[in-house]
Length: 155
Image 1: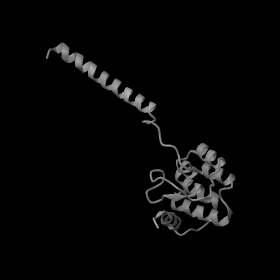
Image 2: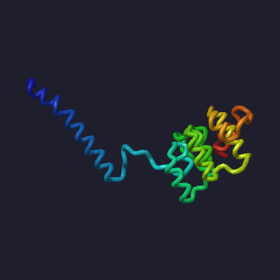
Image 3: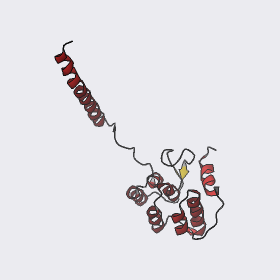
Image 4: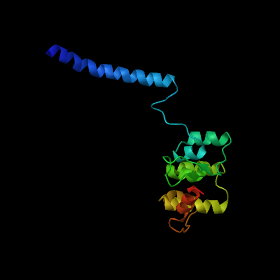
């Protein structure tokens, strides 16, 4: 093989490969397969876990009940936590602003709920959230997180 032919292949091969890759992605997009997009959230708990406040609120306003326990895909929270309310899932976003929004939306109902969520915040090492929800509350370490994990186990 001559030097000229070798040089031509060294330049052309990456261009041909890149063109084929772009064509494959474009054909997939036209066929409904989205290579570079995340799958949509299935409920407000999934959106909350991901920290997507806009989608979470949109789903709540469309009828999702933030106090209902929803299934949550394992990659959003943990393989051990597969069922959570919207507020519980929001703890994994680690955003106190999201918890405050849900509180204003009426998703935290009563002192028992507030204390349970504060203990979950303690288990997840979110002191600012725990202080916001129930200042000065003492919690049994690991109890709130274990309760969520137990809820997620198959019956």
